[in-house]
Length: 100
Image (cartoon, rainbow, N blue to C red):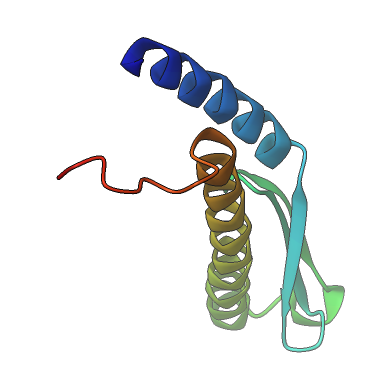
């Protein structure tokens, strides 16, 4: 029984990873002065910096940090939803009384 469950979990985890790899999230700071794009697996795909602030190193650094944190939060939310969905697929009735 546990072998079947483990196999199902591995298959679901692989499918979930693929979905997250193909899910794109975006975030921006200060009305688009910095835009970050990432996957649902938290891989940064692109960073766009508006020319208006390109010469101000400190501002750029601060806004990049802000935008990266926002996009990673979005990616985490999506990953949690996918993980919950995976668990429901493997355990449609929940874990019930499996541990006692």
